[in-house]
Image (cartoon, rainbow, N blue to C red; front, side, top):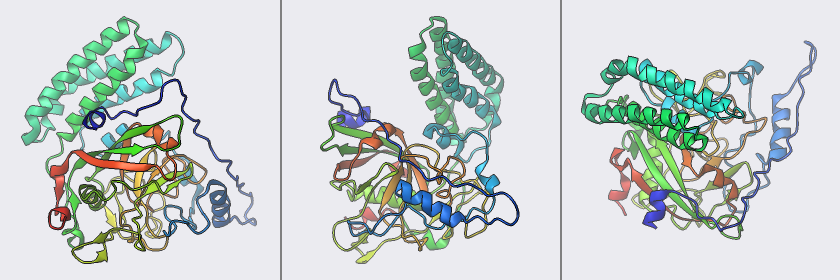
Amino acid sequence: MAAALASSRCCRRPSLLTTDRRRSSVARCALSGGKGNSFSWKECAISVALSVGLITVPPTFGWSAHAYPLEPVIPDISVLISGPPIKDPGALLRYALPIDNKAIREVQKPLEDITDSLKVSGVRALDSVERNVRQASRALTNGRSLILSGLAESKRANGEKTLDKLAVGLEELQRIIEDRNRNAVAPKQKELLNYVGTVEEDMVDGFPYEVPEEYNNMPLLKGRATVDMTVKIKDNPNVEDCVFRIVLDGYNAPVTSGNFVDLVERKFYDGMEIQRADGFVVQTGDPEGPAEGFIDPSTGKSRTIPLEIMVDGDKAPIYGETLEELGLYKAQTKLPFNAFGTMAMAREEFDDNSASSQVFWLLKESELTPSNSNILDGRYSVFGYVTENEDFLADLKVGDVIESIQVVSGLDNLVNPSYKIVG
C-alpha cells in the first residue's frame, strides 16, 4: 500500500484498453432574434440538464439532489464568451496562489505553453518548444532578483534551492530538444512546472486573511494539503485499482478544505462506495443510515459548513451566498470548474449552507458547464483538483470502493482539528 501511495499510479490489467469517455447527447437551445421574442434560460437549462443527467429522479441512496442546479439565471450571454480557459489543474492551482510576482509568472507562462507547442505536427513542435524554453530561461535570468525578493523570509532558503534546480532543469530540457527526444519533453516540463509551483508557494507568507468569527472554530486548512485516494475498482476489465492524487486549496477555501481533511483523518471515507457515477460527476460521502452527512460524535448533530467562494481579485472568500444571489454574474471564481476532476462539495439545492461530507468530482463539460463561465461556478464550493490519474475518474462506477484517503502532505496546515478531540 505504501508503495502504491508513493507512486500515485493506477494498477492496470495488461493488454486491456481503457474505456472511452462517452459524452451524452445534449439538447441545444437557440436564441431568438428581435426584441419581441422572449427566451427562458430556465426552460433551456432544464432541457439541457435532463439530457445530461443534471436533474434526476429521486435518488435511490436516500440522499437529496446535489450538484445539479435547476434554475440557472444567466442574464447576459456575454458572460459565456471569454478567452481560452485554463483547464490544467496544476496551472489553475498555481494561478490561485495569493501572490503577485510578475517575474515568476513570466517564467511559468512559456513553460505552460510547451503543452500547446507539442500539439504541432512533425519537427516543428520541437522548434516551438525550444522557443518556449529560451523565453523561460531569459525570464529566469533577468528576473531572478525580483523572484528572490518575493520569497517569504522563512522560506527563502528553500526557494533559492528550488530556483537553482529550475535553472539546471531548463538546461537539461534544452539538451533534450537538441537530441530531438520529443517523448522526454513533457515529463521534464512537468518537473520544471513543479519547481515553479514550489517557488510560488514559498512566496506566500503565512495565511493572508482572517476567517470570519462564526467559522473560526471549525477545522480550517490554512494553506494547502495533498491527499491520495485509493479506489478499488470492481467489475471493470480495464482498471483494477487506482490512486488519485488530490491537492486541496485552503488558501481559497479554508473552511471547506479543513472540513474534508478533518473527515479524512477520521477515516470517514475509508471503505465507502462511490454513490454516483453518471458520466457527468463522480460523487460519494453519504454515510449509511438516515443522515445525509457527517454526524459529529461530540454533539450528536450533523456538521455542516457554509458555501465558500473566492472571487478572483478579492482578498477573502464570500460565505453563505451564491454569486448569482449577490448579482455577481460576471465575477470569475479563483477555483473554477475548468479542470477534469474539479472537486467540490455537494449540498441541498435550496440551502447554500447545507454541505457536510458529500463531495463530487466534475467529469465533463456541457452546454451548462463550459469552462470559465458556467452555472456551477459560484454556486458550489470548489476546494481542490485531482492532479494525477484524473482521467481514470471516468472509469469509476457506483459500488466501487474507496479503500482509503490519506494525507501525504500539509496536515500541519490544519487548525482546530476535531478528530484529535473525539476519535
